[in-house]
Amino acid sequence: MASARTARDRYTPVVKPENSAPARDKILFYLKTKGAQTAAAVARRLGVTPMAVRQHLYELESGGLVRWEDRPAPVGRPARHWSLTPVASERFPDSHAELIVGLLDAVRSAFGEPGLDRLIHKRLEQQAAVYRKRLPGPRAPLERRIAALVSVRKEEGYMAEMTRDADDSFTLIENHCPICDAAKSCQRICGGELDLFRTVLGKGIRVERTEHMMEGARRCVYRIEKAGAARVGAK
Image 1 (cartoon, one colour):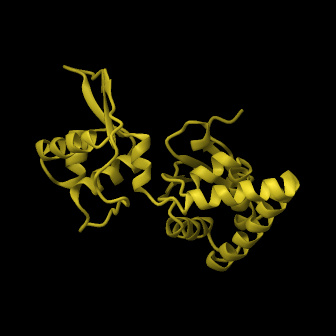
Image 2 (spheres, one colour; image 1 turned 60 degrees about the horizontal axis):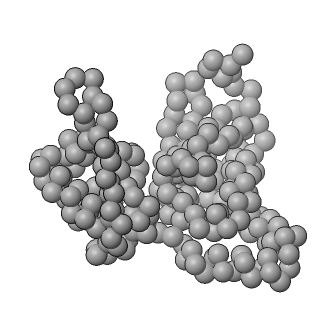
């Protein structure tokens, strides 16, 4: 059984993950970055009691920000997992979504699809120039370069993080898309971001998107590795 409510949230519009943030914000941030979780798991992360977390979760549910689903557990009763609703996305940065979508529509109307393509291409060139200034040079270890890229993406509101995998590849995770509405209006923006990563990381680096919000995933995930690296399970 699952539950979700659609009433608008009565709290402040932007979630902050800092230690001084309200407990509700910390819960929303944790669910945003980790996906569906039990109240006990959230409590362990925040260092509070499960009862306190449940009280916050039920308040958030009444505001339409979270929903629950009972999932089978290996032993005993089903475990209740809590996740964010689409309404909760409004509490995270959106990079002036309405303005951006309006501008894209205006460019498309005035200059057609070719004009929109030129605009996106020019914007990606500008982003690449900024990113190159922030990333170490191509001789730096790949891990350092990806870490710098993650830092830039965090500043831009993507809630980015990275992991180093057992096969020495890297996973770049973006838990939020501050330009989601714009990407829905023009999906070439998403393709452009993949090209952007490939451009700034340079030749000899393979970048693949393995999870994509525009295809229904909770987050966008990129696998990054040296082009000559052997893949686990590769045929």
